[in-house]
Amino acid sequence: LAKTTQPISMDSYEGQEVNITCSHNNIATNDYITWYQQFPSQGPRFIIQGYKTKVTNEVASLFIPADRKSSTLSLPRVSLSDTAVYYCLVGEDRMDSNYQLIWGAGTKLIIKP
Amino acid sequence: DADVTQTPRNRITKTGKRIMLECSQTKGHDRMYWYRQDPGLGLRLIYYSFDVKDINKGEISDGYSVSRQAQAKFSLSLESAIPNQTALYFCATSDPGRLEKLFFGSGTQLSVL
Image (cartoon, each protein chain N blue to C red):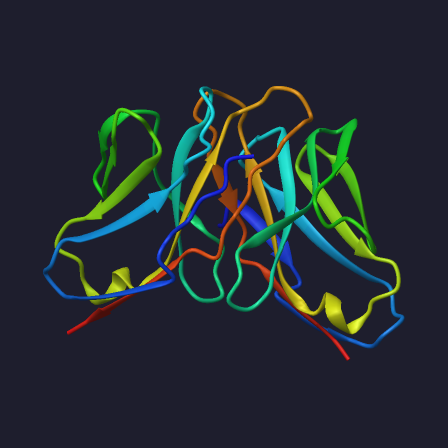
């Protein structure tokens, strides 16, 4: 199983760009990298997913180097409402019942005014 | 209306009682999951189901059971609740495919006294 390592917490200020890096040294060939956001007392919400290079959507960008042993979630111009816990997950979509997806403790991001 | 609905939102019960948490979804997804989250920790998988006839144990299934009554309904039972089952429980769904995404309900906060 590919285990991920993220910083426990980060602080930033409104209007700044925030980058959260996740380490996944044992990533397998078929694994995708997925990031979720969770607000207190709510279920996690999908943010972005990628396999290699760069992926961008209306919320964030995901940078994945060629060796895929790490990934960086980039949140442009954050606001107070981006204060949340961010989870990096690594796994593959298996069509059989051997489903395994491990959630770490995530990164608690606090945005200050 | 929420796509993934969990009931109840909050429940307080006593040790030894049988408890059922219910989940229903309108997303039309075949895959459904039950997770628990303890304070400051990531999510841990209890059970998952890839279709109505397919039920699988996750990493922490002891003390829990599930029932997949229909494609849209997936219930979690605690046959004899104990205090260390106090946690936030989430139901999730996903659609199989190469880019799997999980969609979560709002959670059930369960307290076992």
